[in-house]
Length: 108
Length: 122
Image (cartoon, rainbow over all chains, first blue to last red; front, side, top):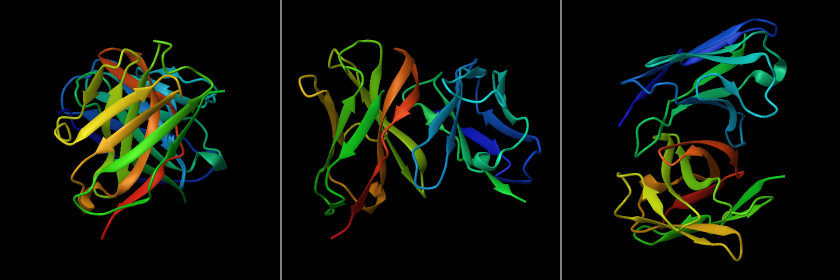
């Protein structure tokens, strides 16, 4: 089973700042990595799939990069609604597909 | 627009069977383009993929749950269901149904239900 490790656990930033979130896989997942955003009481929302493809309706300030074992989600300029928990998920090796433990982006 | 909605009991006794149904609207589960998964989330384990069903009726399960889980579909009602047997407190979680996109070997999840909390307790 592939383990995804996200860092940092918590990111404290102000609106307008740039956020950089990391996801590291225990073995290569090629480009088969997705990113999700989850707000309290809501289901996860797909942001990025296959490392760098934005899902439908996702603002351009969200971008994904990386391949192999190291991936990054970047939010270029944080909006108030972006403060949430972010998860990565791999679809390269299964079963099962696995998720990271999450990075919380909080208001500084 | 695509919507998924989970339904089922919010409280299950230990050793009993957890049963949930996901009703899908806006897309047919028999369209063949997508896969239909159950995913759960708990504070202890985080997000955990449980299993999926394809329109052919084919299923795949998380090896850690394989002996206790079954997923079935009802194309006439555009629903798919989860059964988890012999539950314990460790199965307490928010259960989500989700649509899987991608291919046979790998899915990401582009639409999710709102989730339903299932508590295992006597």
